Amino acid sequence: MGMELSTELKNRGLVQDTSADIEKILGGKRTVYIGTDPTADSLHVGHLAWVVLLKRLGDAGHKLILLVGGGTGMIGDPKEKGERSLKTMDEIDYNARAFEVQLRNLLGDRVDFEMVNNAEWLREVKLLDFLRDTGKHFTVNDLVKRDLIRRRLETPDESISYTEFTYSLLQAYDYRELNERYGCDLQIGGSDQWTNILSGVDLIRKTTGKEVFAFSFPLTTDASGRKFGKSEGNAVWLSGEKTSPYQFYQFWLNVEDEKVIDYLKIYTFLSLDEIAGITKEHNIDPSTRIAQIRLAEEMTNFTHGEEATKSAARVSGILFEGSPLDDLSGADKEMLIKNAPVFEGAEGRPLVEVLVESRLASSKREAREFIESGAVTLGGEKLTDPEAKVEFAELAILKRGKKNLVVLT
Image (cartoon, rainbow, N blue to C red; front, side, top):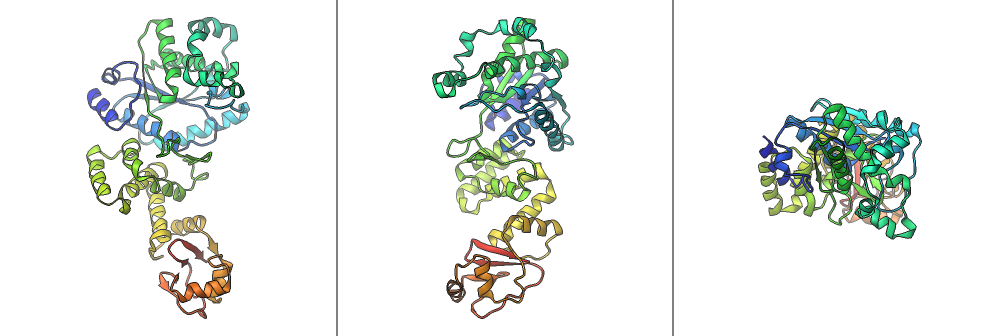
């Protein structure tokens, strides 16, 4: 099982750094943990890689611990540029509770896991005890050589505070605490966390003599090398309140051709053989977007469930492929209205006026030109009479060209 799992993870591109041979690490049953600080009240797509990875490990029989950083969140992991703004304890606790609910919804009925909050011990730590029992095992010489800290120190405007400088020690403390309390012997995390993760492995070895393990997975990026799931500072959230299931579906549907097969391997539970088949079809004609469609379906289903996925796919078909509005469910209609421009009160009014007022045309003259050239459709039917009035039943899609549309209600 360990060999099969390690091979599977490597073939999916899910292993980067290891503290020992990955076959040895996964050769026995481990108690594995990953930690995340509650910096917001929802996880985002950037977290999904490890959520899915945890499920893979859980399905293979490893025990899982999800560590929410109610303590480390008060400090903040050093980032590339500048200090993190410190959140209040109330904000951190609120976000931690939201994380727990969200993770249980994502994994609770699929795999068993234990949720732990490091506030339980870190908020009780006494400074002098921490300095004597943990701090003495780390040299400043080694810490300042770490890439992120070194870059911050070399940039005067981005200098690092002592507060963030200690974060690595707190993460090491967490691993030792989880080892003592739960027998945890494997930590996983993104490759940007690797030195922090190794700090825990070293601390446990130095203070207890035990061998524990760790491995990191590569940070997922888009074709431009930016962190996946973030665009101009805006995350794609797993919460349906912050990013609707339709927007979530569209995000996956629009990933680049160069990356879509990688994402199928990293994020979905499709077998590698099935992904190979999708890859073959995708390479024959990428314009069909067969790989993106499958990715969008798999990820929306995992995050929001089957019904929301079906609605998102139907609404996407209506808005972008001209699918008819037949047999829409109440959820479909609600999703359509929430995620497309809507124009009310069009029934019985002159088509020219509706085109202008809905901003599908900038003037009545332009509206007539669009109509006469055959660029305007209502419910999929081409309208070519500039004197026509708008007539439809409950809902209709008014389009100018292929991409400009409004939902008429």
